[in-house]
Image (cartoon, rainbow, N blue to C red):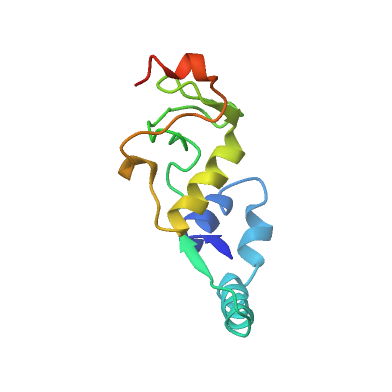
Length: 121
């Protein structure tokens, strides 16, 4: 089970339009119960720092700066185009598994055809 680091996510939510509702919730009690529930299963709770997960390319690791209003991740380095949240989910999963695109020698975006990858090598 993946979980973004609670300190960063809750702090960001507590400043928004739902700040009163977010601050009313007993977050530490929620995370304690979540850890307890996960401990009684064969699952593992992994806290992941969410910084730059939607801006780092999940294919090549290049950071693509964008505003929150931009909902599509488009990497000019490798050509990967996919939903911003999907890109972040891939980065969070890889971070939780201890894998990083930056550790790989090379990566090819899954949306590129074989003809267009020849100029990347």
